[in-house]
Amino acid sequence: MRMTEKMKVIDVDVHNEQNDSDLLPYLAEPWRSRVAATGIGYSGSGYYSPVGVMKKDAIPPGGGKAGSDPDLMIKQLLEDYNVEYCVLTGVVYNISTTHDPDYAAVICSAYNDYLIAEWLGKHKAFKGAMAVATQDPYLAAREIDRVGGHPDIVEVMISSAARAPLGQRQYHPIYEAAERNGLPIAIHPGAEGGGSSTAPTAAGYPSRYIEWHTCLSQMFMAHLVSMVCEGVFEKFPRLKVVLTEGGIAWLPHLMWRLDKNYKALRSTVPWLKKMPSQYIREHCYLTTQPIEEPDNPQHLIDLFNMIDAENMILYSSDYPHWDFDSPEMILRRLKPEAKRKIFYENAKSLYNL
Figure 1 (tube, rainbow, N blue to C red):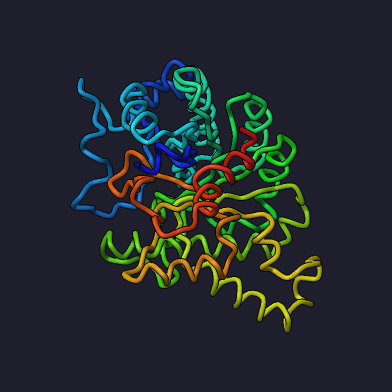
Figure 2 (tube, rainbow, N blue to C red):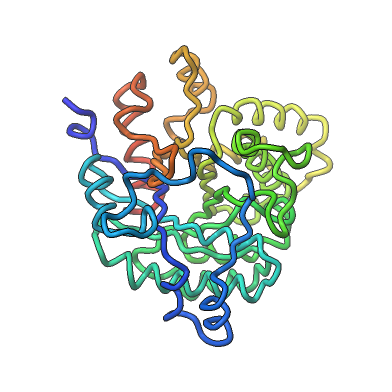
């Protein structure tokens, strides 16, 4: 019997796409004319991928972008894999790499209105991750208060491509607003090294997509250490953070190293009242895609045991991207109870579904 015939699935990272022109009805002037003339103008990473970004079979029969057809998404994802809910994460969070904070905030507002009007009512399974730009956290907080109360909005999505580590206090208005609205913060990669963001690796700018894509987890390590050490989880004790599409295998050594250093350097972060790893276990989730599955499956199980993964991991497919992970193919060796938590129960609890 197929796994999805026995177990329901909640997918927490599904990229609904739109044409730039789709946002025009939700934009006022002068922004509407700008987008009509030149498009949104994302500042992407600029790295060439020979496989592209999208699954070719996710292109709608009538043409358009992969992931832009709700009916095809319902068939290919919800029905084929028994997905009870999926969190629509879009791609607009990449606007955080543009230089103009007012323009970035307006684009996010237009996208959020478009998401609510054009997607969330199409199927009861569709839940939304509203987008905010990080250039001006006060505008982002205002947007969270404007949209965050919608019953089908379940999280706030920001980009891991940023101008500074995301724990720093200039970002705290975003976290305060998310906590006030009872929404987790999700952090997603995609435009590292583009526009106004920092270099995509700790060593600078790599030469090729394979290097860029492999090193994305470095951004998540830096942001997570920053959020812990800057006291984000002490200041906002009800805040949850989802590290989306950043990998998992790096987490054990990061927790060990941070705990070890804290023992000698705790005077530099006197606001922390717990071991750093405890904050991570209590406040953070990671998503499965892109799962690092070694040749020896037992190695991954051992790693999962190190971090209590069955209570920290959420299933994600990354549909309709090229490295889509089918729920039928990954984590086959886990025990049934751990599978139920990762593929369904953790997300149901986090998002109050």
